[in-house]
Length: 454
Image 1 (spheres, helix red, strand yellow):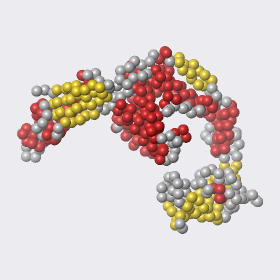
Image 2 (cartoon, rainbow, N blue to C red):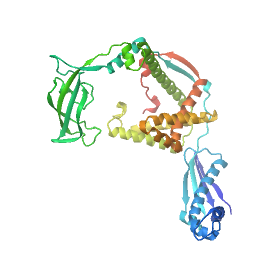
Image 3 (cartoon, one colour):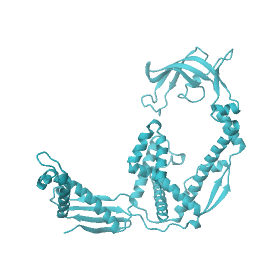
Image 4 (cartoon, rainbow, N blue to C red):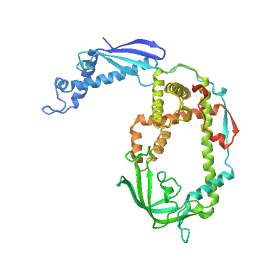
């Protein structure tokens, strides 16, 4: 008796297959494996390569059978997929029947079910029927001037106040020592010496900086504050505290002149070159916003043009991710204003529709990429791995090695690259017209299409 594969059910996109592999067939594979490894074994009490097969079977038979069972499940599952031309939507669900230990002991056939959902068959929309508008905005001279002024403001220096105007004002920088106490006890991280604090910067917890306005050098000020309820250090959150602050120096801001010296302090050869760099940076920002708007419009069109059954498990998995985040936001009181007053039932309805949209668009883009042989090159993947690793500073090499050794982590980096390449392909063949827009319209956040709101 040989292996049997039976189609047990077909319902929509769901498929269930039954697989039976006779114990005798598994035993044959184990014997073949024993014959393969015996000449390579070197065991105490036996000459190399002369270990009796029976002894090998006694010592390693069970572990070899476990390997064979695992290998057989993998091979038969792949055979089911290839013989039936199935493209699974996610990993198949493997359901063993009976006692798997009896199978490993060679006393029972290997019987299991393969349950899976398949990717639906559909015809992607014709690219040439898609019309898009690419929003365009060029930075003005004033915006470049403002960017230069902002840099000058951020690079300003401070000089000690002298004469009669030594009282600290909003915008001044103080050099201070401080010790923080809760219920009279100093707490970890609540003390510092020679700390600099710019009044009005919001650098310290709310209420701290305001109480130092008017302070003079050598003043000792007791600052009373309450840590915010959502403060990052849980043991301090919501606690009342007192800080004994000694003001050592009051420094007034000195505006930076907008000239070549400013540019050179920032590492650029001249003010003209600095303006060019800032203009290029603004153009890059606006180009990124333009692409985002163009892509969003394209996705809306692709969503409208495609209607096909969705694999339920894919939708459920996508919804679960979204819903977990919604519940976290709700617990933290950070739901978007338009969602704050809705019931869980209303939110679940809306976000399930959004999950369906994401799955639909994911399948559409994947199919377009498959049909048009869109590939992510090894060079593109390696560059993405390097870019991601560099975000971790000193741990960059460790993170890069992790990606290099972890196919599933690579897949997470490959997916957005693939998506962008498919979008580029569609845009290159669609009818795209440039449209001059205001900066406000370009940067305005887009709402989800009305069809996805209850």
